[in-house]
Image (cartoon, rainbow, N blue to C red):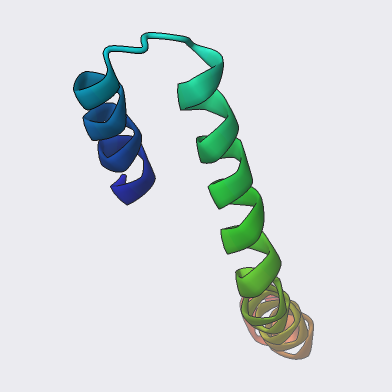
Length: 61
């Protein structure tokens, strides 16, 4: 959201209304956030899957 607001302010100040100027920074920011959050996300997914398989007999019976 912060990237979108910043790009919008820059577009309003410069009066440049090119669509690629809005899409490219958002794609780059999403990629960077996923790159930094990937270890945390993988840790959560591995812990969830491990707990699920370990507790599977409790859920079946």
